[in-house]
Image (cartoon, rainbow, N blue to C red; front, side, top):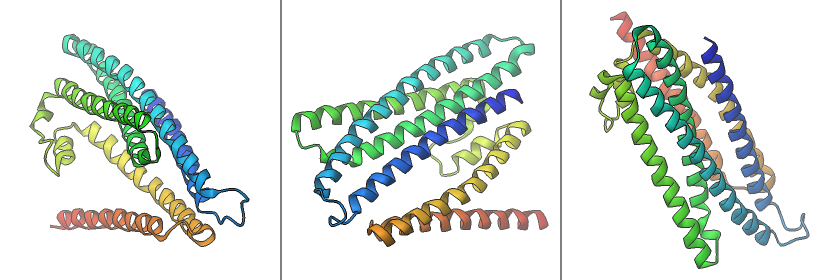
Length: 253
């Protein structure tokens, strides 16, 4: 129970930093959309400068995330080695430790991929060809490193839970297959986490739609952002309700 609280606290801090980064990014976009008559400077130059700085910041974030990811991969690997040779009385403790390290590794993978995508989207703002090539190579290297660690973490999880190797990673229902080979305690944790995520995302979507609407109304930041957020919000909720109705029908039958 104590380990779950520690994990939740760690995830909470990570999410706060991610949201802070999103707010900073949105602020930069809003500044780029402001009318020139309001700012007595060349906004195109300011926008270009902010985008170029963001490329370096996202690259730095990607590198830091991958360094920490490598550290957690090493810890997870050592934990798995202990699990393979562990006695029955310490097995549960080591499996809990593995789950925490594995979850943190997955979070860092997501953070690294997000930094990669954001940085890659702005890479064309780098004008100097030599600097552009160096940064592009670093981004590509970080991407392949992240991909490598993801594969290694999957292999480690199979060592701990060999029965889960039956789940097909290429299937659209891979996560459902993976969960079907879990014990009841792990399923319960997954269900609780899923519902908590669903409830929190309602707030996140509402805030995102509000900010996108204000940005379009006041600063003409574009309708596409509102469209994407609204579409995601609708899809997210419709899928939840459809699946809920499906389960209800199965229960009645």
